[in-house]
Length: 615
Image (tube, rainbow, N blue to C red; front, side):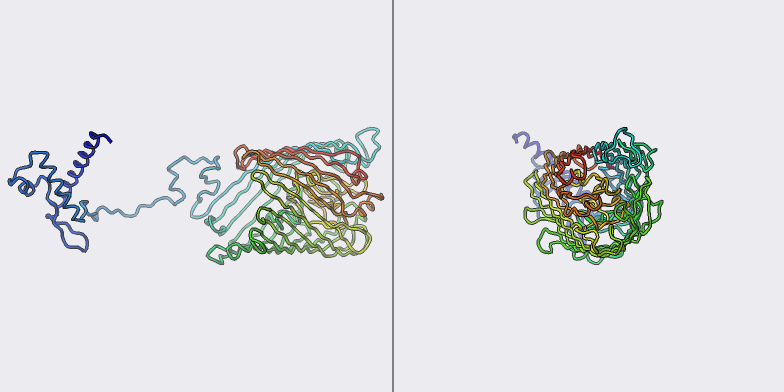
């Protein structure tokens, strides 16, 4: 700092101190020259600079100092006195300085004056996104999802059984080119009470309708409807209710907000980590909660399945409930055998008494499946499951095992009761290298080696939606491949991995007389950009036992090898969030000897484009 600047700063500081001293002196004069701290003795105030006593002490007269040097000397002396006097020169607050309490907005609305709220902006504070209460501690949250899917695919398609639109087509297998468009508008309305920062809501009402439009174009008749007059194109729409429940917080059981809650109504439920057994939105009652600071999580529930709309796959609440009950109990245990691994134990019992014929919206028989005896049946089956999910050091691990046992009134091919004994195992280990993840996948579902004996050993799920081996980017998992010439059933359902030979995953019954599956695969996920992920998968598919297929087709020598499923997909999130997602994938099934013996020697494939907009 320059000398002139330093001198100027000191001059200003001295002037400010002089003004403060004058104010203090004036305050003392108004209080009879004495100041007092609460609980302490009175202290004499310092004289003001221009008081007669100070001037007389400095000059021996009663005159005001006439020189700057005299004033500086007085200021220095008073500063020395202040250092020995702890009393502040500020006046004591008076009773009149205090005001009565003034109401202010709640803590959520204090910042409202800082900016203008925009209802269409989900990134900032928004009344529609539950960022502040409607009133008291009642909140409202709205989520909207626009989900568009377009598929161009080749799927083995039978020639119409009673008619064909292609002259001279006498073969069993027709033209398999298909175009599919599906549009969903999902709206979720949530009205709940309580601060959910550290604990679940005290009371919650949730409503989740989905508006659907879909269009399918085939090359063969009797594919969109049993009536050949309906041609090869079908357009349909539906409004499904995928959620409508009340969630009531029963109690907190610890200072860490471990809790018990009950949920009643149409609600989503997944029995395991990857959706291998039961992943649906049925109607039911579920008691759930946590213990020991969230180390334990439990579910106890009863559910009854809803009929599905045939073409959209959504719940159809306009129809009667299915006579299909699910009783479930599961327990999640964090760090049971190894820190970083979550274990899950589950028991699920499925009781199905649908012993009557049921036709879907396209006039095809859905129950019982059009295979074997095609006779109405009922069954009871219990699944015992154990799963792990987490990591062991750098190795990520997700695995699931199920043992199924029970009985059915009649078998698929045997007109007598049969015992159910089946097994399932799946595992997906992976390891991360910075932005690159390498995966491997293994799946085993037991098959039935003798469809005419008193045991059904083919594993089937209640309602699967598996997340493994690329999930719906895989041709085998994504597409419903029909068993042409062996009944109107599918080798595997749409978004399913099991070759269960059901009429459909949505409306059919479980079938424990099936060929089972063996699968091994490799895959990768590469985050090439913060906004772009590329994934690839290679899976080798085999039947566990082909006896059921040979029986259904009346054809011997069906090989086990289905083929190789290869796929490549890309997910782009331009905002680096879930608000805009663009996904594209391509998959091809390279047929093995088993696939060639059932269908033509062609390589079916599909291309998918998916746009998801979320508010």
